[in-house]
Figure 1 (cartoon, rainbow, N blue to C red):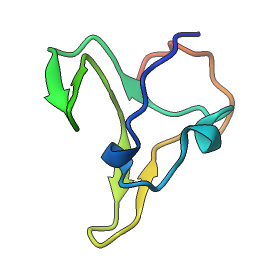
Figure 2: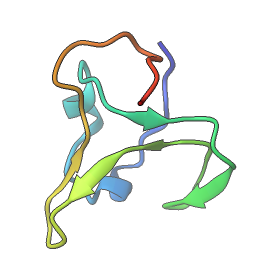
Figure 3: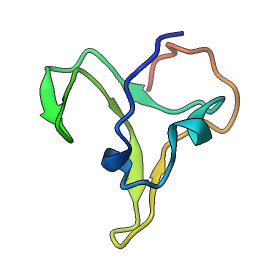
Figure 4: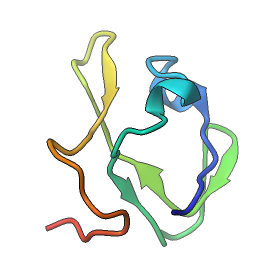
Length: 71
């Protein structure tokens, strides 16, 4: 399984790296390089927000093989 840098400010402090351990989050990879939250990025973890304060990482509802395609 690949390891990715985590920038807490990008999720507005809603999750710590430790809280994401063991979770199956949705990550888009191999994107055109861009600077996000002050860090060069080639991918992004998908998240949702309520427009006010809650930001949460999108996860799967069951265990899935890392690297599975999003459809």
